[in-house]
Image 1 (cartoon, rainbow, N blue to C red):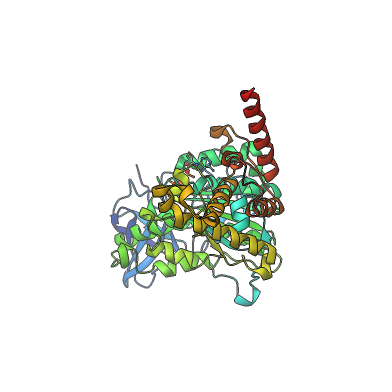
Image 2: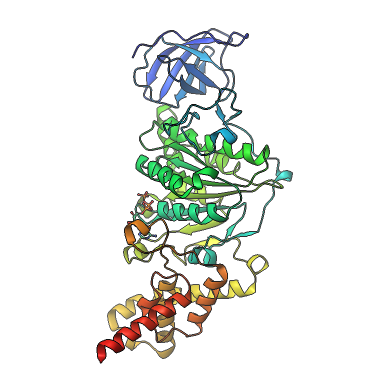
Length: 486
Ligand SMILES: Nc1ncnc2c1ncn2[C@@H]1O[C@H](COP(=O)(O)OP(=O)(O)OP(=O)(O)O)[C@@H](O)[C@H]1O
């Protein structure tokens, strides 16, 4: 790839030119004339063959003339002695109406084979401080998702932060996609979907899904997927935040910010930390882990008149919930949705672990006494079922006392009632998706806890929407059984 000398800066101020002296994968060292060192986090540009410039971000000053920078795009083809232009400011990405309905990369370049963005599109720096504490607006308005187990046990706040934790293949992405459908349909705002280090296939599926359902008209997709260099995966959350902050602060719009998978942001930071020559901390993570997570999470906040509701997926390495990255992210969340491999293996989708999941909003002052009482009784029943699993496996349900037998009967029906077919899984389950109101969810759980379904077949409550649907399924099954008996 021919790399011409960098074209001189167009502005009247002469931006200092530097020269590349070392390239190690995503890390590039650049030497400038004495007294012209660009600031930390400022962007440097390398002009490629007429295409979009390669963007580098300054991360350390090695000596009075040399900076160490991180490439936000691939450095293949880059060589020593290539000239670099210091922009004098942080990377600025396009924001505003022009990016709605578009799929962008970390630098804000459209990657959806659509038209280029207008030259005068407004831009915003990817680095900025969170709003002043006094302007933040901690909301406790409940956000009904239509997913029974979430609305019952881990209610989400309009303007709050929720994270889905789980190992590989437990259903994080599918649940996130379902929430996009559930929320975009009834959410008067803008959705920003950020793909961080996930599969590119999922990005294209998301784009075609959103185009098909029309949700794309109110959405922006920002991607730094697993095929991208670590710099792109590390900075793409900031690109999405800059777009979200513009709509929140300049247009006072509500924003639904979805990030799949925020753990990959930490992983990219860890990769770069090693390449930047920094000493690793616990479990090999970067020593700046908590700072980097805080810098992103603290910017995800609401202000008066405009809420940013965030839902993030968190990959849990080796299903180890004590992992430093997982715990650092968890401390920032209002709702923690833990996905269980055991439940996924049994086909109970969404595989939300009712005992490990939690929400600060499950409080009588927020959701009311009745909701809290039902949620508590559901948890108690499922906890009792879990504690009796071994006894049941060894001796069978019949050997239990009458109280335990009743609890097990109801707990198993609750477990099945909390499973639910999704819209996004119709294509491979063949079952139409269901969105259930909170009132129907509470009424269904209340009826099961009161024993109304004790003599129903457990299968009648599996993968249904409301309890009425389960009742119809039970009646149909009984009729079929009666017909077969004749
Ligand atoms: N609600 C659901 N209904 C039916 N099947 C599901 C559901 N959720 C997940 N699955 C099944 O589990 C598989 C993995 O789901 P998904 O990709 O969401 O997991 P993940 O946790 O995001 O995995 P990874 O971390 O590898 O991306 C899906 O391809 C699907 O077969």
